[in-house]
Image 1 (cartoon, one colour):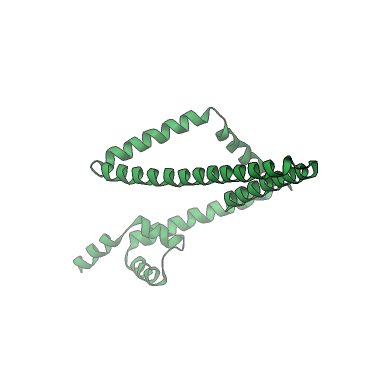
Image 2 (cartoon, one colour):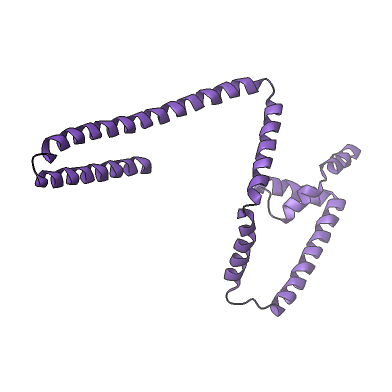
Length: 192
């Protein structure tokens, strides 16, 4: 009998009582704790005291809420104030501070990783090389396309410009169409 009361005293926990009162326990645990309350007077008294406090607060808050009138546009006001409070984070003077914090955190992570920093550094170096290779390829592609178009246009101009004025208009139109097509192609590529 004495061991049973010690066992019950060992199961007493305020967190369990609060979880029970808040309805956060699964059905099986709720049933077990109710059985515990039936056997443990200390826990049963605690539950009753917490219920009295909760009921008193509910009654008090109900009376107070009757006296409070919220404006019709309460949600808009709260939203506008919350957004205006966040706008201070987007000021230019915050940028150096954010950079300093980021650099400090990066340094702390590097120190914390210790020997792993070399492998991470190698991985980041390889990634940077690949990114530069892609950008180099795109740059050379655009450069080669521009050189090719200029060679074609030069040969067309040489052939047509000296023959007539109408052919000059055709060449200018060709330049304009080529330029617009190329710029449109580049814009489409950037979007994707």
